[in-house]
Structures are given as C-alpha cells and as structure tokens.
Length: 592
Image (cartoon, rainbow, N blue to C red; front, side):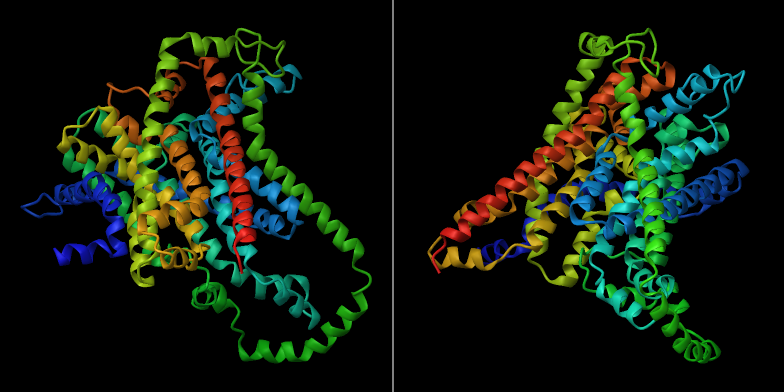
C-alpha cells in the first residue's frame, strides 16, 4: 500500500494513460509489423530482398525520396527568407504575417489540394484564362505531372518550414549583428557568419519535419501527379485495399520508416522544446565548419579589415537607397509568398458562390446553390456529422490524456523529459502511412476495425502529441510557486489544480483541444485504412468525389473547411485575452 501511495505521488504516473493508448494502438502493432517483415520466428530478410529485387519497387522508393527531398529544398529556399523578413518586420506586422502563415497551416490539406485541381486542371483557372484571351488553343498539361505535385506539396508544407524558422530566429540576439556591423563587417558577412549559424537549429528542425512528412504523402501526389509520380505510400495503401499481404505491407512500411529514421539519426532534432542549447547545437554543424577559415584566409582578412572599416565609414550615411531597394524587394517577396499561400483558398471560397452549372472564375453571378446542395444531400451532411462527432470525442480524449501527460513530463527530470517527449511525438514525426498501417493492425487485433471507436483511437495517438506540445509550452511559463503558496494555505492537490493551475494553463488546454479537433477532422489516410467501408467521414467523402467526379459541391465543403482555422484562431485569441486579463486581476488583487 505504501508503495502504491509513493508511486501515485510521482509525476511520471500522469503519463500512463497517454502511453497506454500509444502502446496498444501503435507501439505493440509496430513491433508485430517488424516481426512480420522478417518472417518471425524464421527470421529472414527474404521480404526485403524481394522488395529490392523488383525494379518497380526500387523506382517507387527512389521517386519517394526524390520528391520529398526536392519539396523540402524548395520549402527551405522559399521559407528561410520569408521567415527572416517576418522576424525583422515591425511587431504588429510580424504578428499579422504569422497569423497569415498559420491560417493555411491549419487549413485542411485535402481542401488545399482540391484548390490546386481547380487552378491547374484542364478546365481550371489558368487554362480558362489563357483560352479566353486566345493565348492557347488547347489546354496546357498543368496537372497530373511532377511539377503539379511539387506545387501542391510545397504549398501544404511551406508553413511547417516557416514556423520553426520564425521560432528560432526570434530568439537570436540582434545586437550580435549590430556588433558585427560596427566592426566593419558587410551586411552579407554579418548575416552569413553570425545570423545564419545561429538559425541552423530552425533550418534543421524545419527541414527534417518537412522531409519526414513528405515521405508519407498520399493524397496530394495521387490527386495532382501522374502514374510516374506515385510514392511508396500509394503502393502501401493499394496493397492494403486490394490483397492485404502482411509481409509485403510490413516490409514496405519499414523501408519507408527506415529512411525517415536514418535521416533523423544522421541530422538529429531536439524535441525537448528548449532553446538554451542553441550554441551547442550549432557547434558541430557544417555551417560552423564553413566559418573556420584557413590560415591564408585569416591573414588576408587581417589585411583587408582596415580597408573595410574605412569603406563602411564612408558608406554609413549613403546607404539609404540600398536600404530602400532591399526593403522593396523584401516586401514584394513576402507579398508573393503570402499570395501563393492564401490565393488558392480565396479562389475556392469565391468560386463556391458561383451561380453557373460548373465552377467559374470570375463567377457570372452569386448563389448559394452549392451550399444548399451540401446541406440538402444526406451523403454530405451525414459524413460531416460523423466527422464532427469523431473530432469532438478525439479532442476531449486527447486533451484530458495529453494534459495529464504534459504535466507529468514537465515535472520529471530533464533527460527523462526529452525521452518521454520524443516517444509521445513519434506518431506525428514518422510517415503517416506507417502510423496508419500500425493502427490498422492494432485495431484488427482489438476487433475495432471499421468502427467509430477504432477511428477515435487511431486519431488520438497523433492528436495527443499536439495537446502535449501546446500544454507543455504553456507550463514552461507557469510559476510553480503559486501552487506551493496554495498548498501552504492547506489546499489539497486537487483543489490546487482546479483553483490555481487549471485557470493559468487553460489557454494551452483549449489550444490543444482545437488542434486535436482539426487534426482529427482533416484526417484521410489513417481513416481510409482503419475505417474501411463502414464509416464515412467528410474528408473521405471529399476524396472519393475528387477521384471519381469533380462535383462543385466540393468547393462549398472546402470553403467551410477553410473557414474553420479562422474561427479556431478567434477562439484561441479570446481565450488567451480572457486568461491574460484574469491573470492580471489575480496579481493585482494579491496582497504583497
């Protein structure tokens, strides 16, 4: 009994519900998949040899890595200057730009993919404009090719590159660059030798996140690409849906997982959420090695430093035109990036009010006919209602479990904290198709395949990660002395949590619930694997209609999904504002 009471006081016990769900639905099945891939208990590599012995499989794997790497490189080339320009902007402009990046980040990936079908299709916006102006006589092949895949994937993944970069760049001390400039360094040298090395953690985190998620892409390549653009996730999904050969599916899934793990192991990523080790992280990067000059270069630098100082002094009061030109170029670049991120969504929303029999831009008239079609068609609103119910249950379950886990992780030792966080984030840091296959096997063993309960559990293993990250970020700024003060006044642990801790971390809890709901509501890949034909959610209904027929009702559905992030941000802002006002009132009324 004393042992149980002692264990109950340990913070790590709070993580048990989260890890129990993760273990049953994902952990044990992934081990079983690995055993199936090596033909346990015979233990042979015949399945892997058979996979690599087929040129078609190797070609698909190569295309998967190639497409993911190119999409990641494009996101980095666009995202890095965008993040830098956002950080150097004024405070209010920076906040507005970050919100404009977050909106597409929270928007349904399926809806954004549909937007590019509307733009790039044979009867899409671009081809229709060119045909109307007589520039072309027949539609251009803008869709069902590799370029369309890159356009769609970069559009979806670019916010995931920008946000980590902005997070790291904001924490860089700008006085370091000012000090470099004061010693005669040119702007490019100041950026390359000071700012860029310090931003490398953001570059690494954003690139790894984008690359690993791209490895598991299924919807966008299938909707925008051709037969030669199929990725390994498409191969795995087709195997599950046609003839489920456990050994072949497990082998392909672990090869894809192996690529992701190898990249993560080589480059590494800090999931602990701390920024105190920035200098330590950047010491061994290739960027820091580039900053180590050879002796001849050092001597040359010593020789030209006085000349640079004189030139810097001479140009100090004559750089206005260059600054104005740089500001103009930077402004135009940010505007183009925001246009690329937001215009497809705005276009679909505008076209959803078209009065014609098909989608057209500009609309010949305004009408709510496609919205009426959505609300009057049982197949559409029933699917939407199923998604809402599943999303609410997932949000409630993942928020409760994730909040407990975040509190437990926050109060453990730092080394154990990093490990626990890495484990709980595994379902959202590995290719989603691998998570779907593991969940499929886990729910098959539990007898929950093709049920709403099974879908809820499958969605929860990923949604818990979002809840833990957001609540943990809120707890990082929480003052534990407030809890100690409450306990010193004879408040019990439960009363202290309800009256002190909960009100102060409420914004993080609500934020975690919102993210969990959006993640569940937009899920397609895992739902298609574990739901089967028994449960039809709104994203699955949309995906079926996109593949078989371009029903204009999809534009109305996509518009509704695109408005969800805006409403979510409004809810989060109101929650944060009320919490901040309550905290100020609490501290004002607290006697000193």
